[in-house]
Length: 259
Image 1 (cartoon, rainbow, N blue to C red):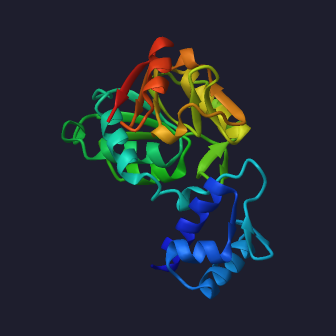
Image 2 (image 1 turned 60 degrees about the vertical axis):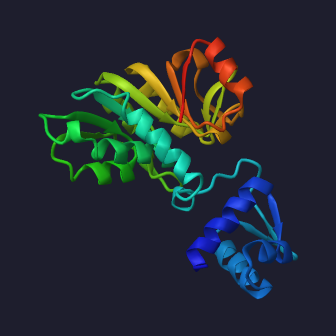
């Protein structure tokens, strides 16, 4: 296992459990305890975790794994979700994409759609995510609009009041939200309040809103609310979603697509 793969695995386990010990992590990853100690020390130097005697813990209760370490988590589910979301978008539409691993996959799915290979433009994409803009900017048939703002290191998203000037002047056909949590009662949410505020503006400027979220995000709550449940028209998730969760969203008037 490469160092990058180990670090991703360690950070994923740490986010799930809150605490890891050296011996347990070494056994789980099938590497030596010395390797895990070195990994913990190096990750601590990058402020990715807090080193403890015999192990490591996350930074606080609202820890968020930076995007570059989340790309491998539930990747097959996110790719299926992204393909289904892309199919809900019509040629010529204006699409808002928030940041996140699932919405990044949505951007990639749109980029390879045959019926979007040409047009003037084939799609207008408005995003506050620098990585999404970077991937789509090489597609001349797409018109890419990037909001202003200050870059947030964890998610590559632009946040802050500078984005309001752009978002206040546009209208969107559809906004696609990547979320930390989506609950039938409490709505969609993110870890960071500034990120949630920009995502909320994208929703308000859109005629319809799609939440793209794997099943691990459903029925959960997070610190900063993006929008109420009734602001969302469609939820696209994976088939591991609990039937009772799906039913709650449907009873709230949301069309649920499972893939």
